Image 1 (cartoon, one colour):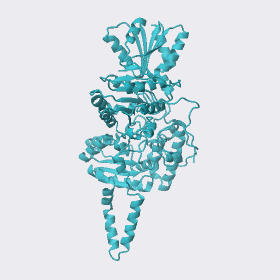
Image 2 (cartoon, helix red, strand yellow; image 1 turned 135 degrees about the horizontal axis):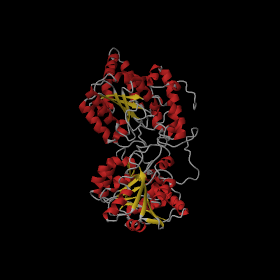
Image 3 (tube, one colour; image 1 turned 90 degrees about the vertical axis):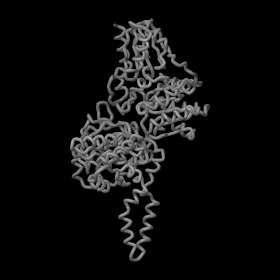
Image 4 (cartoon, helix red, strand yellow; image 1 turned 120 degrees about the horizontal axis):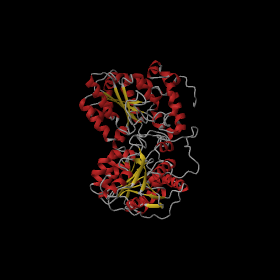
Length: 629
């Protein structure tokens, strides 16, 4: 299709406009929406496959329910693009995920149709129950619909919400969007259970043969068929996940083909009149309507710009590998030498770089699904038996397992290695995905070592160091995207715990940089040097424990600029101030550069870092101001 003249979509200003359309027109609209989504994501990047799979479901929900009076909550938000297109953001959709443009996730400040800010999974049922309970207390009448994927349904939080909803018997419609995938194919016994559909060929064939046989029985055959039709709901409940949801006191409806608009509309019209909790089980195809996404939904779950004709990602020529790639290859290399090494991910084998490990050591690889809390405590159990578990989870997602890190790992001083991908700013995915808190939430944990590499070679040595460390838990944080492109050493070397690296020496100013901020600090140093300002630049490497020479350097030079891609509160800058105070070192002029005490919006990494002063120019400016005090 790939057109700009959308006959129906261009006339949709809000959901009321789709209520006037026929089923045939809605089907045309669905095709136009898919076309618009593919074209936009091919330029801006985004979550393509899950959004393509939820187009008809979105249209049916807005056709039947009266948003924003009725509340529709999109779990995670990976499937909200069609929703955005028909709720007044069509003319701005080309700004999707761009700086100051519309968000790739539901956002309450963006539209009254966005019921809740989402970005992490498995929250929609809890939110829906909260809204339903509030409306009941206020005496307001409105429908509340929580749309949750089968991947998100594997998380414990979803079951906690199901349990309370059933207990309270509140009016809540849960739509289970079942495409047999979260980001990677789903794992676990529940996922296997939920994927056994009564629409399978074997069951359909058996039912057809049974009916033909009964029809051949004179006199009584038709009566028996009518009796079976009346009992069909009971049969569906018995043979499908309805049995599970009925146990939570939900009325179960489905499974229903999620791409048949007339069936979806009829079903939602029926269930909207039911009292108490209802679960509608909808089956969809991830990547629906775009061949490459249908064939490889994992790749197209979240993707950067790509060529529409071929489906191939558009990459810079001769670009360095990503930190994620380096981590994955290094872990395989180390696991070849040490059979104790095991790898754990929470539904992100490709995203976390563990697919190579999975393919090479399938028996030592564990994908626990969207269950970060379980992943951490599971790793703790493995560690008690002498194994060396590596938990690779995005920084923003590991926040969910904070209690488990404290209670199940640190308290017992277990040698679990945490590898925090996507630390710092991540770009277009925005505030729900920025890893801006990990230095803060890891640094205050007893027995935890925290480090961050300045480049990919140092990442390799840090992973090697972490797996040889016998003192307890250890965390490595590294950024999203391309590494620096340095030459990597052929041999691993163990880094001394708590020892930084002096990169330049000068008498006028001390720059303390860590992780992703070391390279721009090097470039800022070069500019300062041209101005005649002599700089000592320390690659701190370790946030905890701090290098003792930091105190000595601060006393010697008297002025220190701390640069980190973490929220300023409780990060490296705070650690330096605490260190100096605890040792009675006063009178040092300290300036801290880091992320603000706020949530950073979405946009290109270069733009976001510039806005926060965390690029070469920002560091140079801050250093010059400190020097001139």
